Length: 213
Image (cartoon, rainbow, N blue to C red; front, side):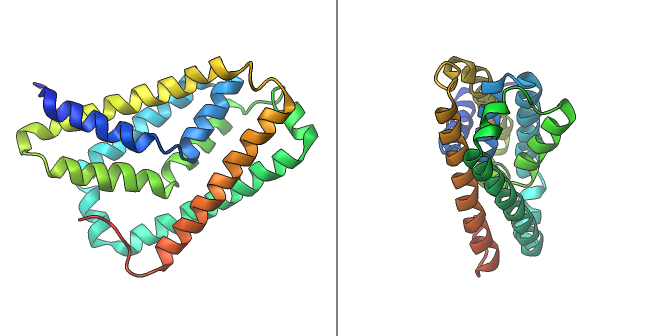
């Protein structure tokens, strides 16, 4: 497959611009990177999930969401419940000094890590909005010969983003050695999740459901 530079860079830049607004999935990768907890596994899982969603958005999923708004509402509400639960959990951990102090000694198991990463990926409404709908729409707007290059550019940006986030987090470990910085990170994470959950509920329940065409 021949890659075309202009659509490749456009896809790369679009995904990179969407990633700047750090969401729950990226915050989870950052937290696990700080703990050195299955970092490579999480980076690979999140990146491959983006590959599946970007390819699906450029293929059939984009049309499915547009034609089946009830499915989109259901996924958004399920994601809102997941975000609410994890947001409350993060805030409770931030208020519990014993939990903060013991977190480094009790990392997630491999199975739990994958399950939580899957939840933040596949139950996160923002992921579908960014990858399936926005990038899917932008891909379909490209001339057919340029669509593979555009998608590959977005996929490369995803791999670089999660790799930098997961492994780059280790550079921040000296900042988060104390209890207070980890507490602030939990407050930031929990607050972001609760805000996104409220927005997801409003989006799902409020007419019309605003997906781009």
